[in-house]
Length: 497
Image (cartoon, rainbow, N blue to C red; front, side, top):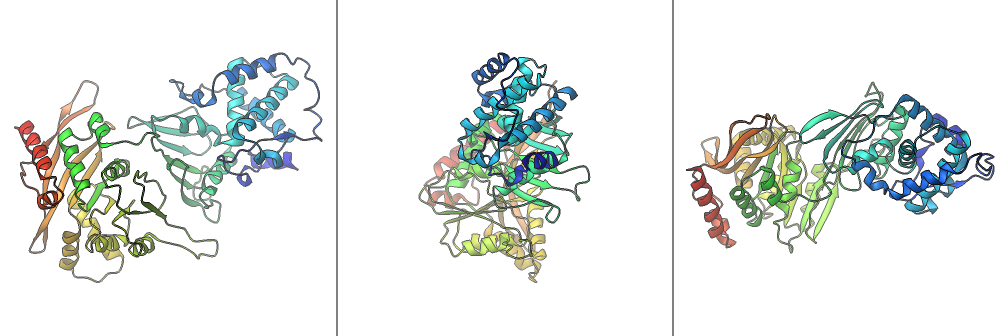
């Protein structure tokens, strides 16, 4: 029965298996005739196993050149070994073993299968095969080497045969591939099931997350014509800080000092930017300067913020069930968190009518609240907030809506991904007030391009606009930060001169 499921599902019914965080491997089935038989030439198998064990699996994906090119013969051999493994092992014992024990037992059985079937393989190929099959049974299959690399920002799977990654802001194709579209779909189901969601023909679009907070989107057939499309926005294992963004050139040291003060003195902040511009990373960086005794409540579609404060409550939206009931929207979360005595409210991404509730929260004593919005400039960010309020069905005069925005938002920080793949903070902009029906803003810091070097990398610098006393000066004075703010602005102005 199990062998049949393995051949039909491509992954041995793995979508019903416990998630990879729970150990899962196998004991040999008593009815399987192949496993107890002695191998004709057993000597090479233990050597291969020993060699494999000497190199920790976690280090294997970190090879600088990436995974080796695999031939069709390799994939054919892997398919035969995998089928034999599925016929040999008993998944009812899978969850009873630790991850290490599970891998060891799978390796032992695979080594026996290779010896019995007399496959001609080099030591390197056998190591790759062992690791691939362990990943197939226990982890995320071919994705494991990519997930282990910390230099990858995005993983984009376009069906079973195409996998792209983004490294240093540039997209490149890899040699990774899946056995077939069913294996890919099973891995997608395994990922989303960990956060209580599902992806199938009746619910083909799903947002989820990995245990480390990486954002996952899946769109499955029949909507995705060439097989499931899986997109993973990876999070670095080491949390980035503003000081590290300075090293990367995303912001100048003086600009970073201004951002630290903005976070410290509880300005209401909207982080604006396009897709992949680093909005969530910047939001994580700013939350490092929230006082540790403040109660912070986060509202997100997929919980990915990584706040370091001890008093954080994380809320996540929920899609509708099969009957179309039970959906919890971002608006529901923001409204509810107002009853939870928050000191700061952080909305991971504002996409619709919830912007009105966030603005109301900012305007009713929850200073220091933050959110992100997709837009390409601070002025466009203000226009998008107006549009999203109108989408919510609020029949308010335009001037009233703008007055609410002006009374709520203190600072807009604009992030951008430039054409060379680098990410920069291009504007730190204050919302000043209104003149007639027009919202007035002033830029404090701007990023100006100067050109590009011989390698095609863009060259630019962050400059002061000459604003000596921003609108939040009094707020900085209230928190005892006015001297630090004056010093940062003065240093930036000198550099500009």
